[in-house]
Amino acid sequence: MAPRQSYSKSANLYEPCVECQKKRTLCVRVRRAHNLGHAALSVHEPLAAGGEKVTTYGFWPAQAGKPRWDTNVRKNDPGDVYSNTQDWDPKDVQCKEIDEKQEEKLKAAVNKNAQYNLLSGDWCSTWAAGTYNGVTGSNLGGFLPSSLGNSINPPPELGPMP
Amino acid sequence: METLSHEARARLLPGRPEGDEEALRRALAALRYTPEGAPTAHFELSAPLGWQWQPRAESPPVPGLLVSLAEPGGRGRVLVSMDEVPRELSPADWALMRLEERGHTLLASKSEYTPLGAVADLLTRASPPSGPVLARTNMAKAGRRIFLVTCEAPEDEYPRWAPLFYIALATFRALHRGDAALAEPLDKYLHIHPAVVGFSYPASLQLIEDIRSRDEHALRLVDPAAPGEDTALHPTLTLRSLAGARPRRLATEHIERARKSGARFDDLPDLAPLPPPDLFEAASGLDLTGSSPSGDIALRLAVFESEAGAVLLACDGPARARAPFGWAVGRRAFEIVRDTLFLV
Image (tube, rainbow over all chains, first blue to last red; front, side, top):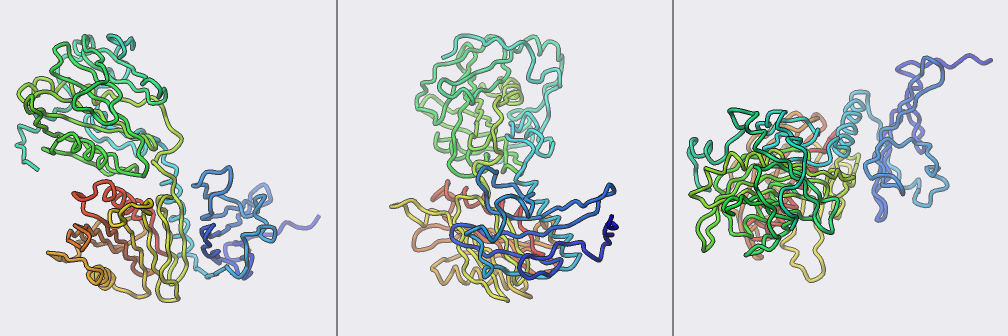
């Protein structure tokens, strides 16, 4: 059996760009009228059990059946075979090498955007209630005592519905 | 805005009630309401025993009214309204617009910025023929839906009702959790020259790239007007990064361009420091109002600095008094781009 390839921080960490073949390269497909540009930066990490974990930090256009804020798109997802994608044109690719510090910032930026798009709460309640449902857990004002929360009494409606 | 004394604020905008919690508990009932034809707009709130649902008819009509609840004498009322907004907006901006449509003016407000836009606790006054009315309004947002809960009473009786109004506001809860947090989806943009610039923006805006070069990158986000609509009532956002540019130069050049397009600003304050968003080391900005051949205008501008350079974000649009909706759309789009912007 062939020995498992060893990985280090300085070698084989990044998948080469599909076009320029450079490593640690940010590659952007330029904007077209029907499809905004995207970037993909893939990090390969060895797993203790063998094999590797590939994480792609990317900004991708919306894909059918996926929410627009899906930022965790794997580069080799079905349908992402560039040669089979009519939208893909190698002439549209711009590549830029980035250093490790820039990469760290980019990861943080992608994470920041993803969090913004995936707000954990999906509505904000009133100021007086003192919460907007888990978005940050910030207390906007004075809560009622918990015993006076939203289940004060069993909720039979008072009076007729209009 | 009228200035209220500390005592008046405490009396008119009370917080958590003190005293015998058990007695208060016994005096309250949790109410649920499901609007006819809109089952997912159901909500609950707590009110004193004896309060009654009221017919929907209001004179003058309350926009978007789902239901009102009143004490037996009909003097103190809680109005719950809901609108589906066509664009991403801050709940606080929407609430004030709706209240102003009903003739209310702002007396006091307390607001906080959240990732869903600003939320606020508003105290307003209206002067219908039947006599002055005070109202306290809170708001909730669920995707495109913005709920407004307005508690109002004749001005001379309002302090008596204020503690109960607090309870109605504090216990209001929309019961349906929507699929999305914001009123509209976001699109994303990324460019790599002269620096890596990325951000998210409301998908209804149209992105137009003006300059792409090795040294400069500039684009506009345009809120498209419907056919026949006045484009001057819609905002335009500008984003510009320039290799090695200093913040003041980016700001000055933007204002000069606005002036060349006919804008006139009465006062031109210096850039004021702002709290820098994540991933930026420094930020500064200013808010301007002025006039143009098409009417009164507002300009909000900020410059963000990082090791990689500086980037300008500006929103040019109508003044609030001229087009409150367009103004609010631009303001919220500005916030979203600002919150998601990065420069690497």
